[in-house]
Amino acid sequence: MPGCLLGGGTFFSFSLGMACRAAKLPVSSAGGATEDGAGRWRAEGRVCAWVETLRKARRVAWVGMPIAPVPTIKEAMKRTELTKRYCIAEDKQFRLDDIRPGDTWKLKSKDQAKEWLEKGVARLSELQETLYAQDQWALLLIFQAMDAAGKDGTIKHVMSGVNPQGCQVTSFKAPSAEELDHDFMWRTTRRLPERGRIGIFNRSYYEEVLVVRVHPELLAGQKLSPSLVTKDLWHERYQDINAFERYLTRNGVIVRKFFLHVSKAEQRERLLSRLEQPEKQWKFSLDDIRERKKWGAYMRAYEDMIRHTATEYAPWYVVPADHKWFTRLVVAEVIVEALESLELSYPKVSRAKKKELAAVRTALRINQA
Ligand code: ATP
Ligand code: MG
Image (tube, rainbow, N blue to C red):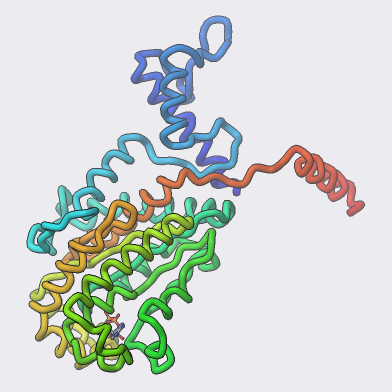
């Protein structure tokens, strides 16, 4: 991965440069640490402390170690500020109204977000390579939203730089007869990402406390004994989902959930454009209008769901979705943040393996292999 090598080194020099500046030490024109008169690196005292902090916080590699480049501290702080704004982890009082679908934080236009989004997508691609190589963790991303909120477009754009081999997307529609013959988690469990992969659920088991709650008649098709269908059903499902997500987390599957929060007015515009533009007409479904009429019931179901299933280990992100460019930016940053929290690294090559590689390389060079 030459890109990673170069990037890692570049960032390292930059970080060291930052550390020097912060410690008020001279910085060399190369942007790295300065040398003292005797020509020795002044990697001591305050500089060392700074570098150590950086390394610990971000697993910065020493020059030459193959690891993906890491954002600057300033970039990381900006990201945290953005993602925290929409993160719900344990909040029984959460109100959907507290997050405006048209919010764009401090950003005024798509152009202001462009470079940031591009960087995020590139960083995501690098982190995914490391995730894949390390083959220890998996990331499960769940997308829920009203129709036309932009799930498909967000997934397409945010994951555009990712190697398709490391990513599995599954869209969950109304369950089939076979799926209805099983417990409600069955079909989604079969699609969980393997270690080293990113799994994306376009809709998920959360439909079981959303569309099924708004249309309780769907429960009849689930072949549940009447003794199991009590007034506690929805809370029992929340409990089961929370337990399942904790189980996943404890098994190395990181869970991040997105509710793309579009306004009713913006949905109307998007449905109209599906009707008016020939190349979008295939996307239009009369069901979208049927569900739109139940907007209030859906919002109550979403709010209740988020209150009961937002946890520290599997938070919900309520992402403003009236501006597609902003939705994409937030989603990309949340994913980058989640992957960075894993402190990923490429598998270490043992001494014996290195010897073996060197021997093969020599043989290949002299054309004997
Ligand atoms: P778009 O945003 O482009 O409309 P979509 O995800 O809504 O995409 P559709 O094919 O339009 O895809 O709709 C899938 C439908 O399947 C949704 O209405 C959803 O509520 C429904 N569905 C998903 N899971 C379940 C479930 N467990 N029970 C009943 N209906 C479900
Ligand atoms: Mg739909």
